[in-house]
Length: 420
Image: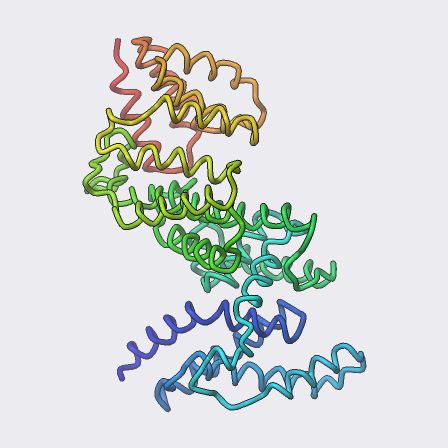
């Protein structure tokens, strides 16, 4: 096999197996940072040995065997005095075995619980939002530091420091490597879902840079959502988030023109929407609604997305239904962003004047300071009311606020079209 082919194989294996590997090692060592270090050691060994010896028949099991050996050696070398740590070393040694044909067996048949624990640990609220997102992409999406830095337009040093601080915080705070139960589950699950959706949104509508979308981030978030749905099948909001991401991702091919320019929802060629993703999304939405009749915020947003997905043409969209769903969302998740989206829905369902009535009070919201979508929405409503001079000023304001080059070009084009 060519060296370039082996490198691609190693990269593909790492993307698939890294979360499972780190999750199992974290269970054994009770230390996420150490687990990642051991997994990285195994990756380095693969990079050294596979080009020379060939790719093993079961590469995932090979990586696990190497990582376990390194862990046992580390515990022996340090001569740990702490009884708990010594017991962990004994457990790892007892489980040590050569690479087997069945990788699930090499993970001690606990991969589902391990992954779930790792997701809840990486997304622990004790970490900042940025740290949770970064650690999740590193541990669960298998992205390199360079890839994360490129996705968020940050330096590798910044990302690396963020990862180191996050792992240190988890260790210093003695965060238990477990899935919370009882009253602690709901807020922790909300944090997990928030992180996955933040990753998806950064891919779906990049906040900065030249590209309108970063599809790889969307795919990573969708994969994490599907994994979580399989591990927590009775949590309706997990299925709601999966539904929302699948339906939104279905529009990806229609959202960008041949030159990379953004195409807004109402102008998209719906024949280019991915019907497989729409079907997956609608199935997940039905599952969420079946698990619990009272819909949570992600399930409500998925229901809104489903209204668009079911409309074969833009003028067939049930905007009154969407406006009603936003009313419900505003009750259970009140926020200026929800109100802004509700204004759009009301403008489409009942006329731009109704939308403007909702938008106007939002100008004083501190949370929307510097938020380009506020003047963007206001500009759109004013344009529909033929108040072109005001609309142009709003589009220009929105263009000045955005850090995304593609979005800026679109807003300036709209400003140019707003001539009285």
